[in-house]
Image (cartoon, rainbow, N blue to C red; front, side, top):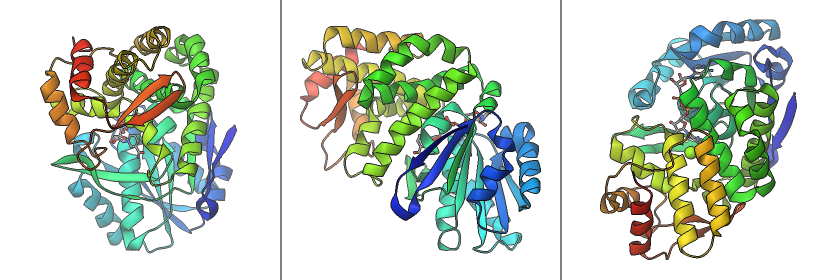
Length: 360
Ligand code: NAD
Ligand code: MG
């Protein structure tokens, strides 16, 4: 088992990573300080892993109930959130309840937001089951649901008590989801960890082959990067924004194609290529580092070209992203592999030209 800590004073918590963590009654018992838990999961993950988790809770002597949500980003909304509250209230769950999120980022974000607001806030733990959720969404305390007018627009910061990542559950994850998770893994190398980027270049094939040791290493190094950023800047006033590399472009792809057509990680893959292209054209990223960046994203099986929506449409969609501040397009760009910076004064014409160069 690998252990990391997200250092946030009295809200600090461990991230435990390893094969078979779902069976670790000790790890869960150590994080649950309430007599009852309510598991929030979905109808894809429940048949695969819910029995294993409930058996672990039973061994730990913790009483449990579960709420099974419909699968998918389309259900990350008020209506589904309300079904969690319905179940908690109908089951007479009081404040001495811990919510347990068992699933990918959608379940984690919704269970987290339910925990942030149910009876003004109850504890929760994250048991992420996708690569993306193990390396990204389960760590850092951002929780949210979508609004018809925007993704993740209603939410709260609420840190979990524990993140428990069982690498073995990734064996059932569809290939496309695994690759989408790798986009966020590569992102950590690009924004702040050049040694990790080097490691990824030599281990990408093992990761695609789901080699358990390689996966555990990639998850640990990703979580180490994310937790350091979160510890420095919990509520995204500064350095945490670097995590948005490729995301403003990617958001335009996701929204422009209709949410769900491109997976988030796929859009981030193409978006990071757009960011790297613009960085290279501005004279910040060397041609050699630019080529390494594109090559690794391609080897991960991610798209390196966006859909041809037209630069004007991209820019319009990018302006609606919530990363926009006071009307200025703030972009995370690269000075080097492992060195990212936020720019808010790149000429619009240059951004448009880079987008056009990166569309199929
Ligand atoms: P997801 O939760 O939709 O999971 C992808 C698919 O895999 C789903 O169909 C899911 O049911 C299925 N699945 C989950 N685990 C599985 C397993 N072990 N085996 C087989 N199938 C499995 O998507 P995701 O990529 O995990 O998360 C995306 C969500 O995370 C988005 O809503 C995004 O906004 C959010 N997110 C949040 C943060 C944050 O900081 N809170 C960061 C990044 C992303
Ligand atoms: Mg992301």
